[in-house]
Image 1 (cartoon, rainbow, N blue to C red):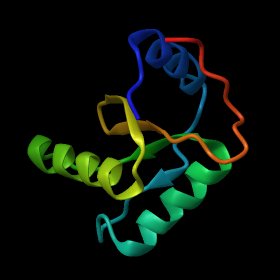
Image 2 (image 1 turned 135 degrees about the vertical axis):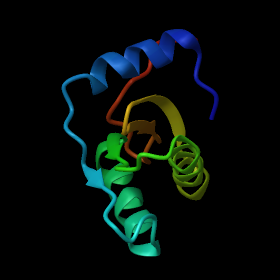
Image 3 (image 1 turned 90 degrees about the vertical axis):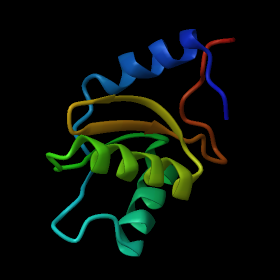
Image 4 (image 1 turned 180 degrees about the vertical axis):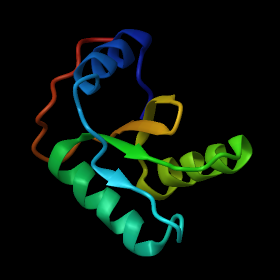
Length: 98
């Protein structure tokens, strides 16, 4: 799914007050974590995921893997936090027109 800049700005505004729903642990990105991210996306549509890694390249790879595995859209990443969006069947968030 492709989001326009206007839609991304809208989602960033909605995500501002959110707390990270998922936090990766020492085991990194496992199948269980991906399943939890999927469940959270189905329930909330817009979530934050905290990725505690000091290696920039590793963090970028993990973020790309999360987006790819969940078929979601990356809204933004700041520091250790990734914000992703995936519309659910019963859309809770109405995006502005592109």
